[in-house]
Length: 274
Image 1 (cartoon, one colour):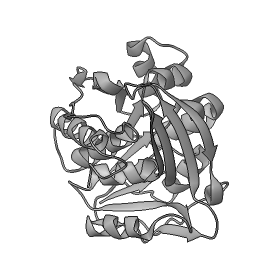
Image 2 (image 1 turned 135 degrees about the vertical axis):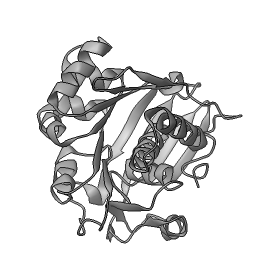
Image 3 (image 1 turned 120 degrees about the horizontal axis):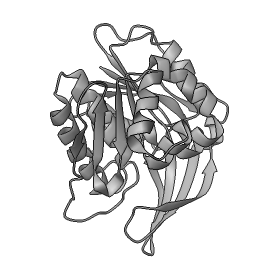
Image 4 (image 1 turned 180 degrees about the vertical axis):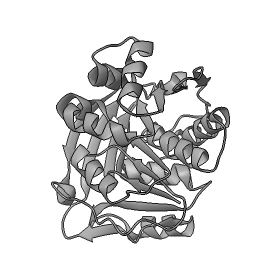
């Protein structure tokens, strides 16, 4: 089983004049959906009364355990972003955490047997709290965002000693290590704990760097039409960690993750993944 924590949101995105409003999203949702084709998934998080119940029902039908997602009176985390026409660069217009503001999610006892944990992008205090509730975990992954690395770098660095797989893009690498030189940045991160550092390159694919091994790269898989690029990185992270948990080689895991990321961008929200 893969346990996933992160944000659960209602997203509004704008791209090339097309507005998609109130789409269920968030790092936990995309990562769980990305991993669900390979392993059973337990999702942790907090939503408000406005989060669609039918989405939870659909996740359950795909083998995702949502019983640890709490529903509180009030609004769900709202996120609004405007993308460039290609769907790559974006500007965040709104980040209103709603009922999730200052909230630590319920953390049930860890599952029996071999399991992994993905600390998806959310406040580092939440990631630290969830990690503390999973002391015997075969594989721990950490994903974050540049705004967390710029504002909470100390907290994130404190987590690195307990992390096996770290996901960073170029901006996050610079905030985390003080350098944009990839080889040096990866070496600094691996010295702090993670055996594996995955460099996310968006439309250019990704590179996996395992301590002592040669870098392994994968190209992005392009669907016939790019509909919504939101959550592609989260789906990639969930799928990669699930594949590694299943014993796939690094090359195979990267290919699986790239395929799932392409499914994420082929539909609105998680429709392409499910």
